Length: 451
Image (cartoon, rainbow, N blue to C red; front, side, top):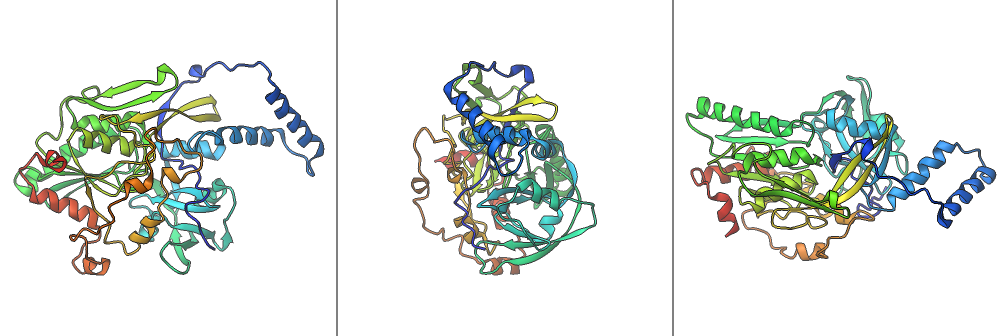
């Protein structure tokens, strides 16, 4: 099956900075009937009276709501049943399944990212892969929730996925055994005198979890390294976003002054500035250089953090240009079983830069050389600017204007096979750690990268 990744890209479900809102905050609806609403009701009656099969009212109503919100932008949608449960799982979740974040793209199921340590990651599934068949059944132009439900199931049971990977000529099969997926928003390790903190999603308490991680890494450095850390790597790669409040909290950990992010909407009530020193006092990593790792899968809340630390010269951003989702969604419950996720504002980095479409451009562009398929997948990566109906950047930035430098960096000539012989499985992380080791004792690393 031929996949056209840039066509009909659907909603990136988990790439949101959700701003919860109570039901009481819903605006009053103008109930005056207009000619357009008359037309809608007329079509409803025509369908009820003339369609070849009898149609349920709930189905027609949901279709009308879905169509209304889909006409706005890719991130405004109606949530009920499985779709609402998936969002709740992303925030709090524990379930049995494969551990995948997926979207519908060109009628097929596309992997945004496998969760770290999940059965899907262990089986070798990668961001950008397309799942075309599940246990031999074609999943094309079908409901995404149906595919997600099919992939979930009792721990210990297996299923066979047929995968199309851009850059390869033929699809291939992967057998994955389901497991208990406990979403771990934050994981960390002490590696070569450097603290590596991976933030996999922005769910509840991410700021506190990273604060605890930094404290633990300092202890490990004192016990194992005989001194202090050489620096910190904040890994936001393939992090599709989550809570705006947690993005602000994480940024605030490293900042002791200035703005973190601002949001501006049509309604004055949506215009807000988020500043340092509101959630955490001081810079908990003061004196330590910080590298933020990002890639095309780093979206929304991840971009808020990367943009804040980059603009405030607190960290060097490495990796690849981010997804480019610069909008804020308000989560508006309708009742216990349904809600609306509505785009209500754009957000801006401290320097006033909107990441909408353009994303965050790293200070140091580092390709993932250890992945033999990385280049082919990068060329076909779907970003915000590829999604149908996306908001337009107010500065009218275009992808081609952001990717004018096509020259290969002479430092990045090694092949995946050559790196594997050296035991390097993650080149981007390896490069970040090496950079911090080379610059140990030079806290001006972030400022130097700007000069």
